[in-house]
Length: 180
Image: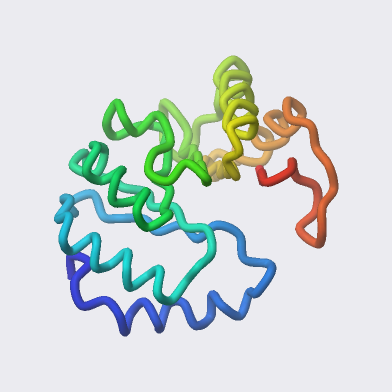
């Protein structure tokens, strides 16, 4: 499909998403590893997405061609964040990119994806990064996906102790603009 001719599929995908209403957080779109950046196709896809969805969006690119200035400019133009993933697929994948009003960290576990817990110094540095992003006015998201070894919840709880938490709304405790 290569992000071409997706209008009907986007509509089909977004219909149940809309039903979440105010409970919907940041929408994560994950691209396949073999999908190389085609700027024209990506621009059309993101335009079609934005015509149907105004909320927060982050894209987890998994091909190195998406980690350059052209892709970040495209994301910025369409108000889409580029995910910072660990382990990174390219050096630029370590830091969030694209539209900086939203930052999104997706942590899969390292060295063993989906199973490894994160060392405390890594989580301490992440807390500093999240605080810096917050001071810069970004709505930051941090998602742990290292669930295979049951490390996601302890890692998220540790990180949460490093961030000032205030209760807000029906989503439970989270830092202003930030969910862990």
